[in-house]
Image 1 (tube, helix red, strand yellow):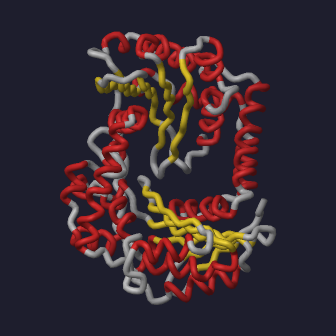
Image 2 (spheres, rainbow, N blue to C red; image 1 turned 90 degrees about the vertical axis):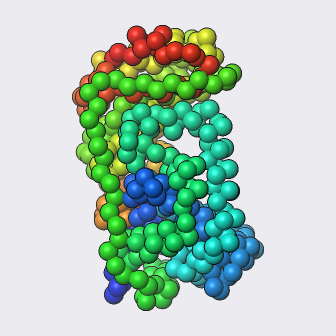
Image 3 (cartoon, rainbow, N blue to C red; image 1 turned 30 degrees about the vertical axis):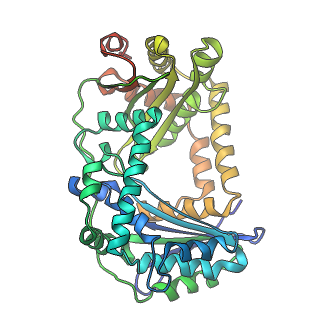
Length: 423
């Protein structure tokens, strides 16, 4: 497990993070750009994701998508990207001998995507199909619906991919303006991990970006939270299962209690020995899939339980989930705390064997917070969480007034569920 990294800030302000992993045969490059759904107006909804797609469609030196993908896949590498609420990620992992080619490809399409008008129109229906896919999968739809319930009328409550209406109206000029607004040196972090010496990696990145645009990017929209009563949204569909999400507002990525919430999450809903799995699947045989997740953003977060269940058992499942929310507020025994702690620590340590995970770990923290916690820092914070911390966080967050529920399934009314939504 790598225990050290180097941060280099170039003459024009670009932040480069490197981790030399001499035991590997790979090199991973991750570019993080401060562009995501939290930076978009309602009219721009989905533009970060649209732009991510367009970066792969050609540059002056590699005019087609095929030439870009062939350059990486032709050496056995992996090239991909993802757009989230607070950042867009472009990443590549290649055999170490092909590091320079991989860096050249990534740098090329980040700096000079063609965004050809014809390609924009060709890609628009592809993105609309991606949105349709998410809409058609009931579990995905429940995930989107809980965001709408939890964060109504704001960026956090929208699909990162936008809406059919917004994507249909995004023009080439809008894409170009957004790119010029967000894609700039202060809004970019390059993170490299693998069998590449630190100085070699940093010099190569600096060579590609020393003349790139350097202006202040646009800012993100802060969260608005005026919730004072439980909320529910139900979408009627003729599905074989009811898809249920029950959640509350969580904690930001800089909140000291985020590790206590992560521990609570592990106790309640991560793995086959978690409370919800043992209760709803092993004991009651109600579900195949039940789990919890946390998200930690700049100024907020979420804690959400999900279950897929036979519609005739949906009310019972909701009641059981709520009961486990209530029970964890009564405390967590030391033995259960120890198991959750070792679960979180072990998962983190195992992640750090992969060069791409290391590069991603460093780059995301630097872009979002302008600082990096080492793995050892986080392990120490996880070790410091007590049963009292978990109980305090549970009592603070798991309250009826902040409860949010989304259900997708063959139900005509939500009245039968409302009575069960009290912690």
